[in-house]
Image (cartoon, one colour):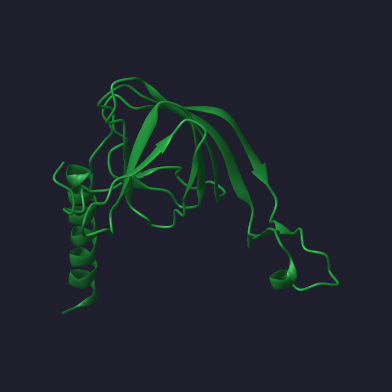
Length: 169
């Protein structure tokens, strides 16, 4: 196959993949996410461990390191009863604190579609980096959360994904 035909084939295949991903994506329903704050941060190399003791000898500590600049988002999320984020992922981690109601998270790679419910005052972590998930309000009252996200600078904060087929919804 000559180079022009190969290039044309690659361009067509890419277009089909982008189109299929858009068509198969599962957008949210009733869910709203509002950016409260967004800022840029230089590469991070942070450790709360004392230099004279190794981390495994400490009762608690944090190591946070990025290789490049990042965007830091603070999001306010609201789900009415029956609301859903739709299946999606993020390019970096999210720390989600439920501030009202209860949300239920489902993991795209869990063949049994196990529900993980989080109520007011509870926090959970989405590792991001391709980790596909959906968060739903399966209760009868509005649910809310505050989420802090750290992602590569300039990256899309949310990436819609097709339903993985492991859950009946």
